Image 1 (cartoon, rainbow, N blue to C red):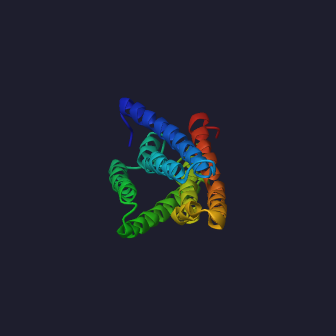
Image 2 (cartoon, rainbow, N blue to C red):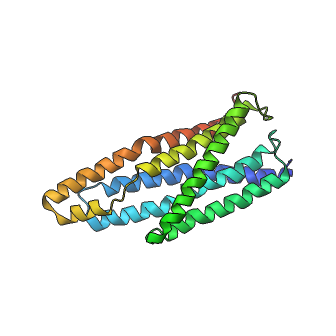
Image 3 (tube, helix red, strand yellow):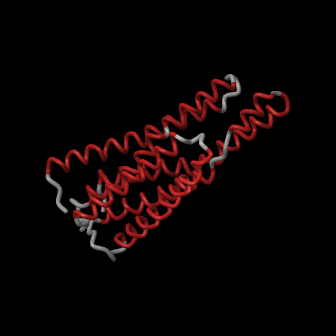
Length: 225
């Protein structure tokens, strides 16, 4: 499917915004996480920083989903032989996925949301596996995508989805730790230690995603091969 030149430029601009808000939003979440660890702040201030981080995190979460329809729409003008009906399907599917992501955020304190969270996780496994193998298949010359940089970019996105799953598996509920800190004494010391350990646990996958997103941007701009 060949895009109209004007529409192509608009989608390309949105593509750039996705990278900006993805990495910028992640940085905001990272800074909020640093404030959550500051023992010189009151527990209420730290919880407030946590809530800010949760809200800011919706920017990269949204961009993560939008990368699928926007990326494949652009790819259709770079030699990816995807028919128009399939591009339309990707947009409809991604809209449903994005709704699910925001519904989980809006109802995150509702215990009944766990079922929807499981569906979201399953979607990430399916989409991640499909895109990863599609990218690798084309990267090694088995598919119809001639531009190797594009196949590599698709492959990296699949890796990002699995790294996001890694982050989700690493995240723990911090609420009990804040309760321990609020209690004071030995419980406070233990709570602070567990909070630092929880933060350290998610550092490797977060930094991995930053590197992968930056690499995707590099491939899209430089097109080195």
